[in-house]
Length: 379
Image (cartoon, rainbow, N blue to C red; front, side, top):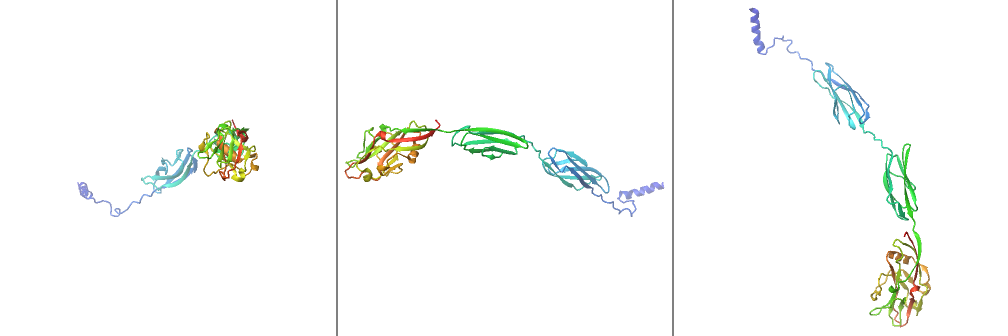
């Protein structure tokens, strides 16, 4: 009965939150848990190619307990594993910061240890190959330009010969070969060499000579009367003035219909050396000039009354009217290539008439107006 009473008396104290421990033990504090420490022992290899195995090794220590868990992560790829040592081939290309931490038996995690690893792209081995080597024309005319284009894969060095030399693995270049030439592309990689060639055929034009004939129906003279008067065609041309002091101009059409449209006029010899004169045309009327003029079918209205410019021939005396080559006539004739006619006008340029009542003229029959030409053509 006594023991039961004592226990009954103690229950209220416990219910009121009072401790039955001695007062000397009531203020004793338990020691705080020490945080574990994580260590990264090795990341091997420190640099690897994408897809290659990377091994991460770490450990942890806990001064007042034991390490029970591990965590690895990458700043680029996130969580990697939960073992002290892991191997992975899944790291992405780039510079990775690798973090590692451990947990102790009380649930506390360590600070993260950090190290790095570099993952490089897989090197793609490209086999040596000449993908293409072409020209936009296989056959050209002398002086024309042709374009070479090429594409090479996997080469250390690329060159094109003759005359071009080292080039990039792909490109285009314009060339103007002076003769038929075979161009060879050479591509090398280490001890391996490949070749490809393309030939450009250069056609040289044939040379021709021709004497141009006068088209009589479009060759005549016009008197500058009021109104102008046209001589009947077929009688050649006269230039100057007559006793009536009326000026006269000559108009000549040469037939160039047989000259091919691709012709390059290389030379023109002018031979107006057969002629007749009346009076003293050069002394009284000055220099005789020849002008290019397109007039189609000759008519009275073609008599020229303006200030003449752009002459292609100039004779200031009879002594100058001899066979000679003329670059200016060659150039004017070249401008007419592709048409059927080459037309010119003769007139004394300083004065239309000297008003002295004398005949001052120079005259050519149709067969005395001669142009010897040379040209080159591919036709």
